[in-house]
Image 1 (spheres, rainbow, N blue to C red):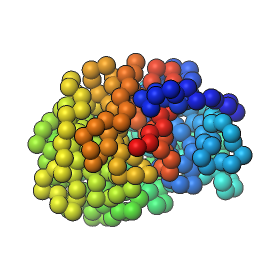
Image 2 (image 1 turned 180 degrees about the vertical axis):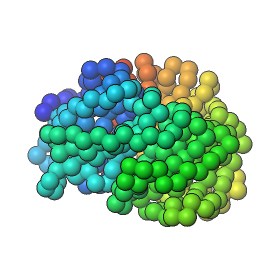
Image 3 (image 1 turned 30 degrees about the horizontal axis):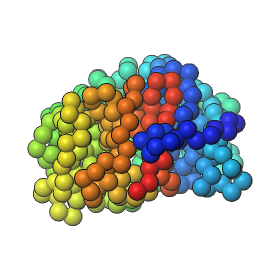
Image 4 (image 1 turned 135 degrees about the horizontal axis):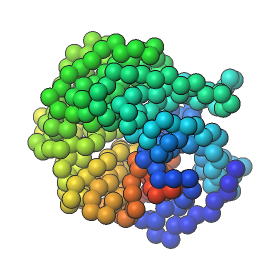
Length: 324
């Protein structure tokens, strides 16, 4: 276990830097309260699983602490990752379960007891898999979205349903408080909600721009959708979905990632070009709260309860503490 001192002198500086052996391609805090301090980091040929201890949550901790609990081989570069709700270190037996997509167009389902790792390979997509998510209550199903213009539902290692689209699927999401709905974001700028049981469409919104490269569905407010499309951050309120509630230019040469804070609906993080720039915005004002240039950006992920944002970088994950 490593104790780390805060390095921040300005709120656009990270408060912690977690050293990794190679470039980071994706970064994911567990979105579930019972495993919220677990952080998964996808690298060129491995996955690092670590545990964070924050002073805000642990009265026995006077400094932030970071401990790598498992390093797992991965046959290809990690493209995307998702945590399963089955993951827990507070019950016996301890279980880590998560899924990845690789550059070989396959999904890998990893299950570990912190000693032995089991891997199941799911085949069916014919192009890059951009996003994947577990059914958030029991974790028995996985939804994936791909450049092959499909979203697939997987159960017990098999593809049970395929939805076909007119453009690449960049994002899929399943909300913890809206179990009956699955979100699909297409590169063409269309974001759709589907019934998770029947997979019939419920509603769609159009960003009016392309390419859409990332969407997020606010965990703290299930009516709030965010997308980065071309150079803009576009926000929707699903109670009045006909037009965006706001749109703002965020990255002049193209926005790549967007993530809504998981503990408040007032913060949203974006990254994009030029300069692999990270920005954090207040949803109800025009000003930016954080602006930081990175060497590379390998994913954005918010802690589920605390105001921390993890950002993958070049051989490190930077942690920002965002207050407003």
